[in-house]
Structures are given as C-alpha cells and as structure tokens.
Amino acid sequence: MRINTHYQDLEDSYLFSTIAKKVAQQSAEHPEQKIIRLGIGDVTLPLCPAVTDALHAAVDEMGNKETFHGYGPEQGYDFLREGIRGYYVQKGVVLEAGEVFISDGAKSDLGNILDLFDRDNTVLVPDPVYPVYVDTNVMAGRKILYCDATEQNGFLPPPPQEVEADIIYLCSPNNPTGAAYNREQLGAWVAYARAVGAVILYDAAYEAFIQDESLPRSIYEIEGAKQCAIEFCSLSKTAGFTGLRCGYTVVPLALCGGRLNAMWLRRQTTKFNGVPYIVQRAAAAVFTPEGLRQIEENLGYYRENARIMAQALREMGVWFTGGESSPYIFMKCPGGMDSWQYFDLLLKQAGVVGTPGEGFGKNGAGFFRLTAFGEREATKEAMARIRALHEKL
Ligand code: MLT
Image (cartoon, rainbow, N blue to C red):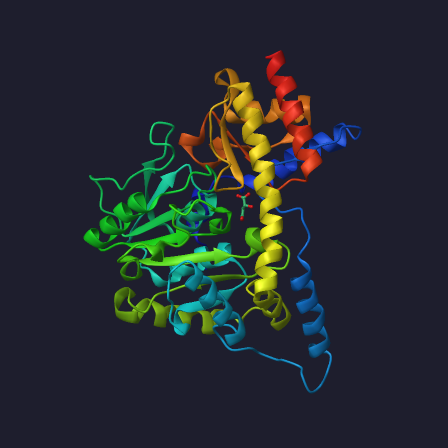
C-alpha cells in the first residue's frame, strides 16, 4: 500500500481549525472575557419560517407510510431543481433542467468536481483565495499557478496575459476580499477561458448579497459563459443553511459538448446518494415568493451589519474592500502589522476574532477579514472595541 504523499504538501492545518484552537485557548485562559466571533463566515440568524414549516411538513411525510421517501432522484428532486431554475430566470439566465445538480453544499462540489479533470491540468487561482480551491488541488498533486489580487487592482485581478491555465477558480463576490467583478471584468475572464480552452469553476456562494444591478449574480449572465464555466452555489449564506447543508451546481450542456455534464452525473450517481428529502423540501421553500421575501429580511440584516462595520472603518481611516455586495470586509492591518500579529492582538486585547488575510495566501499578508454575519449588538460592540484598540496603537 502506498499513501497519497501529496497530503504532506498541505499546510499543517486548515485555516479555520487553527483559528478555532487559538480562540479555545484564549477562552480557557480568560473565561471572564466575552469573545466576539467575526472569523469564520457562519450565520447567526435562524432559518426563516417558510423553511422550518417545510422541514416540519417533510418530517411528518417521512413518518407516514403513504408519504415516506427512500432514495431520491440522483440529481435532486424536480421540485427543487425547478425552483432553482426559476431563481435563475429572475437573473435573466435560462437553464435546462438537466444542468442543475443538488448537493450538500458548494464546498463538497468544489472539491469533488476535480474528479472530472486530469491530474496534469494546470490550475489558476487568484491570491488571496478560499483555501479549499488550493488544498483540494494540492491533495491531487496538481500544478497551481497564482494571479495576484492586490490593493492596486482592487483585489479583482484581470486574466493574466503570460500564462495559459486549464482550470480557473473565480469567486465573486469574493471570499475573502468581498470584492465583486462587474460584467466587463467577468467578460474578460470568459473571453480568456474560451481563448485558451480552460474551464472556469465559478463560486457564486455570495451572489445573494449583490444589490447593485450592474454586477452579475451568475457567470451565465455573461455571453459565452455556458461554453466555459461551471457554477457552484449554496444556501449556506443565502438562507442560513450552514448547519442544514444544501447547495447546487450548474454544469451546462454546452460545455465540452455535454461531456462534463454526463461525467458529473456519472460521478455523483457513483459516489453520492443525494441530499435528504427533508432538506430538499426546506431548500425548495427558499425559492417560493414567501421564502425569498423572508431570506431577504435576513440578508438585509447582514448587509446593515456590513454597512455599520464599513462606516466605522472609514471613520478610523482604515483601508478596506468589500462590505457592499458581500458579507466580508477585508481591511488593512494598522501600523504595518502582519495579519497573525493583528489577529493575536485583537483576540487578546479586544476579545474580537477575525481571520488573518495571510491564511488566504501571500497577498493577504497585512490584511484581515471580518464577517458581517454576527449579531447586531455584538457587531457594534466589536467595532467599538477595534476603534478603542486602534486609538491606543
Ligand atoms: C469562510 O469563513 O470563509 C466560510 O465560512 C467557509 C466556508 O463557507 O466553507
């Protein structure tokens, strides 16, 4: 037996596990300190009533011989896939029924999709980046190239002229920087991918935070994208499903003459038995008019948190991106501090947890991510503590 030695090439631990350990240690040493967590992007508002009603009803169905459900359809139930297609129509995008696949979340699919691609493909990721894109490719031993997202390009790198990639990861609105591509910028990536024959793996997990109509909420709003892109989306941040788990992936039939769609179906039917019926019923409730209205209230709450945070940072004279079309704010650490130094200082002296930008790649060094998913009072309190700390520096 030989093990996969590529695992040795991974960073020691997943970013959010390292943070959790540091926070646990601080809590154990200072049980009196009230720690405010604006680190991992986990939601704090409960599921909306349309969703919990659907869950209760589905549980009752499962407990009744006449309405019980065993294994479901492999790509997901039609009632949910149709709801998602309707949601895309609102964005001006028409999908075929066979293009939508239901999953337990974008993270799993973003990793699993790599089964479809040869190990010898070259991967292009922006830096800083959501660690999952990098780690899943390191595990497979794939060559990774980086394109620089920096303060100078507003953390929205254009396609590189000098390299040819096979698999490109894009996330917009971006995790961790909160920056969002406009149609023209995204169009440049679609044109690049088509010119070099690459596939774009497009993570749209934060699309629901966009309000500005000049920003695309799906890559398929860009002409030609169905020929070169797979889109991943999730209900985690959109509808508070981080603990319930449901997402969806769109694999267009126009991509590689339908081969990738057929391969993904084959992969999923071989390795995955689908998302629980009750969870799919809950997810379908999100896409009803009532569900959409209710999740919009929750999204509005997080947007208001982001506005409060952005306003505080502006008043403190701190440079940042995000916070407008995104629940993330990517701020510059004060006084030229490095991100982990600032993380430790903020945790120890202010009891506020964020995420060190460096954990997302070398270009994140000197930056720090805060999330708007906290409770309102805790968010205000965190900003007051950050302000007080900065005044002392
Ligand atoms: C984050 O904080 O970056 C996200 O919560 C991670 C995730 O969605 O997996």
